[in-house]
Amino acid sequence: MDRVNGNLYASVSGGKDSGVMLDIIRRFVDKDVPAVFCNTGNEYSEVVKFVRNTENLTVIRPNMNIRQIIEKYGFPLISKEQSRYINQAKHTKSQKLLNTRLYGGKKGIGKISERWKFLIQATFDVSEKCCDYLKKKPFEKFHKQTGLYLKMYRVFCLN
Picture (spheres, rainbow, N blue to C red):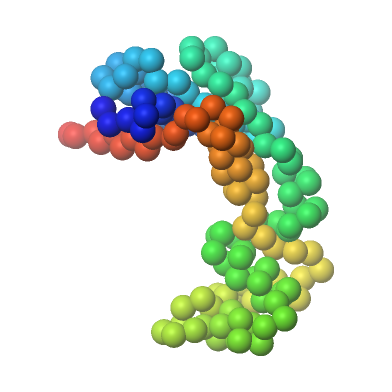
């Protein structure tokens, strides 16, 4: 198994796919690989109970809950890309960026889909920040505190 200074962990969501992934990793790759679960507060209680019974697993939490993120940054209504474009169009002072978001840049890249343009005028914000604050930042903080690295495993099932 390739290691980064011997300090790897597996991120689990508490769902069946990540549970199977962790089992395969621990059976066939490294029986001692630690697992990390980020409890965002949006998980079912059964998932949290299941995760808490998993050996060698650390539970981390984000610094902000979903309500705080929505109040500060906006709703994650559609794809992260489109949400970011809408937020930028709504708040930019750059006419060039606004034009890119409304009409597209080279080859139409960077354009807000026609069906979502009405959200630019909405009385609430739309943002892609939800994932950053609920998942990415807690795992970055965990890495800084522990020195452990997230290892991405791909599990393929052959028929």
